[in-house]
Amino acid sequence: MRIVTRWLSIVIPVVMSISGHADQLNSSKLISTEQLKEDFQQLYAGLQLGSYDLYAHRSKAEFDSMFARGLTELDEPLTVFEAQKRFMKFAAHANIAHTRIDFPMADFMSFIDQGGKTLPLSFSIDDNEVRVDQYFGLSDKIKHGHQVLSVDGISVNDWLKPLRGYLSADNAQLRNELLEQMVAPLLWLDQGQKESYHLKLKDPISNNVFEIVQVTLTQDKQSQQTSESQTQTDSKPREYKVIDGAIGYLKPGPFYNVYATNEIETWDNTEFKTFIDDAFKHFIEANVSTIVIDITGNPGGTNSFSDLMLAWFADKPFRFASDFRIKVSALSRAANQARFPKSGSADDITTKLEDFYSRHQEGDVISFPLDNSLPNAKPHSIVDKNINVFVWIDRFSYSNAVSVAAIAQDYQFATVIGEKTSDLATTYGAMEHFKLTHTGIQVGYPKALIIRPNGEAQPDGVTPDVIIPNYQARLTREKRLKQVLAFLKSSRLEKQ
Image 1 (cartoon, helix red, strand yellow):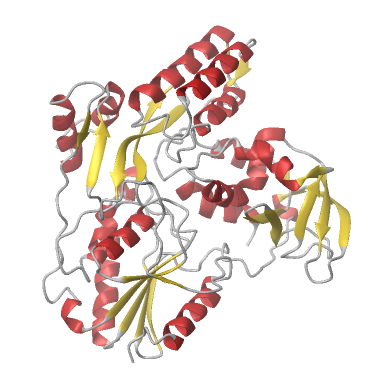
Image 2 (cartoon, rainbow, N blue to C red):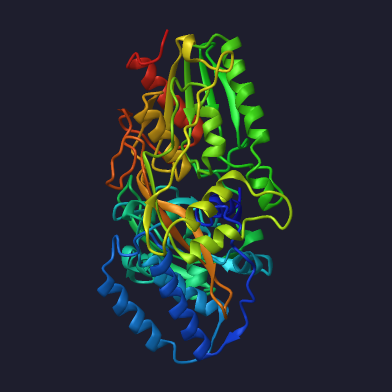
């Protein structure tokens, strides 16, 4: 597996949220100083107007100061690409994952296709400790697990600091997880192509500290190495199987159509429903006593998919949130109206949102009425089958995968196991977009506060009912599954 494959598998669903809004921009187009300032003013005004609470983590005074400074610094024409870099940092300053301008993936891929060279390694970042995760270079000295002490004579955390500024995240751990997948692309964004990097590394076994100059490499020169990392691309996006004759293993994969060829197909759940129904029927026929649902490393998606899975083991009606508070704005109404088809009928939620907006005033914060999702009736249910269901999460479970865990936990449909998620169950979400007039840059913002089913209003991740000790989130999925199954057996949580 080469490093660009890794970026595509992580960056597209997580950073771009499969939103369909990562439009191809004319990146080399030169924008006048006056137009840049108008777009920057539109950016800040739009974020204030549409966001549920732009100042949840940063004060208005901080933002006003950053805006004034940024406006002054727009003192010469810039390309769309350079403007996008500045505006990305401004949006990311909110420390809200859904307040963001997406990474210019099309430009980066063009750079790669044209023979661009990048740093041939990725990092794992835990707190302030940075290690080599995967290495794609040609040196036999750099190994998985080596601690990175400095780069180009700068302590590694100071070196990474400018890159963190581009990433929108609600907490430091989530930002680090995004960063470790994106170091090489963000280096290109921030600095352009460099010929080499001077690395100071430490071998954790021998404690030997050494320095090496690592040259950047084109994609075809980067080696296809493997490591213990879970970030290797899984062979199947979705999978189910029976283990040891008694344990059903289900990896539902992303909660969107992984086989879609366009944005409309992305939300077609036909394939997913067939897959889920086949999986649970197979488990019933195999007479399993335990089911492990693996949503680790899952980028999320939408509940129109995940509810189909939950309905198989839910024993009561359920909702993905106890409250869904929307801030009414002209921006959000316009974004919703854009989803109406030119002919035919709009989907149910689009129609309901239009009615909702029409009945409320600009700036109102109102709870949007949510319908219950219903459990399946027999024979499409395992509720009466005396099967233990475990939902397995970790720090790499994102977005709707976190919501699935919260529903399973709060309604007591299943036992949640693994490690705490970095992404949040109560969160600022329901993302919408608006476009800046002159640059064409798309800006994302959260129009709602989504409160998890148990009513906990404090934004936080999902803490498992059962935390697996010494869990290693970066091992391959196969090795982590062995660890989980061994733990279930040793702790007698698995039904015999």
